[in-house]
Length: 443
Image 1: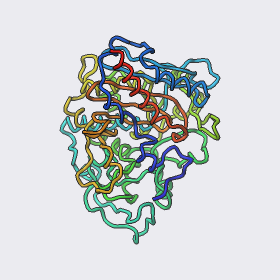
Image 2 (image 1 turned 30 degrees about the vertical axis):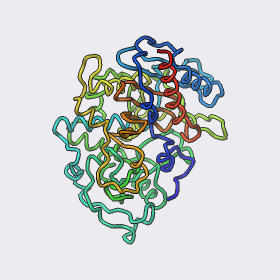
Image 3 (image 1 turned 180 degrees about the vertical axis):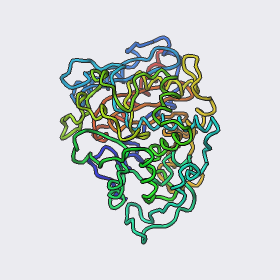
Image 4 (image 1 turned 45 degrees about the horizontal axis):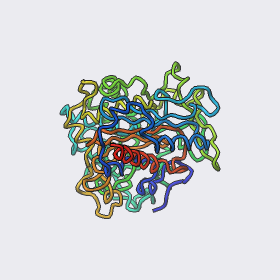
């Protein structure tokens, strides 16, 4: 199986290896967390490895800015910030800087699905076709990324379910992953789930998306699957399609549902699919790394995130701040509560942060042999160093995870593409782990 275009920030093989977008936290549970953060508040002296990592990236001009935000319980999170929102700009980056979090949108969408299961409006193993009938009969490629003609297609052996959508096991493809005829068909149909820049950057531009979630779902139903449902972990548009499921089942527009059920109750006042004009001064610039040089591809004043999106991308559409995303993680760490307010039920959080991979997985699946996957985020399997962690990352250098046993949560925010340009997704959790060990030695 060949990798997709290396100029794009995502590579399926890199995902399997633990590179881009695998989130973080895999090594954290190997070190016991001690109740030191309540004492340290925002004391940077307790996070020397994280601080050194952040400083090194910014001082070497590999990124324009970097913000680490680490918290536990009700103690004020530690803020480790360097650089400016835009290279050469005047606003220092901080907990309220706005970042394109891309696939860190997926855990939010996944938890919204868990809420509807808790509400009794969805079931985890409910067939997708119950809600979106056009998915009742789908075809599957016999050869991955091969022809989409009848000679390379066969019927799905089982229905796509809600479980499959939230765990990337539906067999649905992804226009940023697939290659060949199926990718071309997705682009022609406007089955595009994301945006990068108003400028059609070669190697990054993947076509114009259709202009509604309903049409996106209808068109996606006509595209063959790349794997049989429930057999392989394959990064997909399942969480984008879940946005359509949520709005059909809830009777509310998907973006309104997120605001009413997650953003407002969690106090996430700086999380949007479209950034208001009034907030442009704190929107960071996004860059592409070319031969070690940062080139701006989405500056604040001309950002595509100032435009109304084609539809709310449940897989990669949100802009948020370190402070806001920490509120989401804190709610999960509190098993559904934050500041004494219940946002979602404990059982729903436990479900969403547990391993939900189906029991029909192919034994040869490389991802499932190493990790579990919950509602839109990777989870550490029992008996592994990452046991109890849940989280994911974004295509432009953001990472967010929570250790459900200790309550420690951590986020890292910067903006660069492609994500494979730097080994940040491995370096950040390693730095956090090192600092936790350091703290243990001080006790």
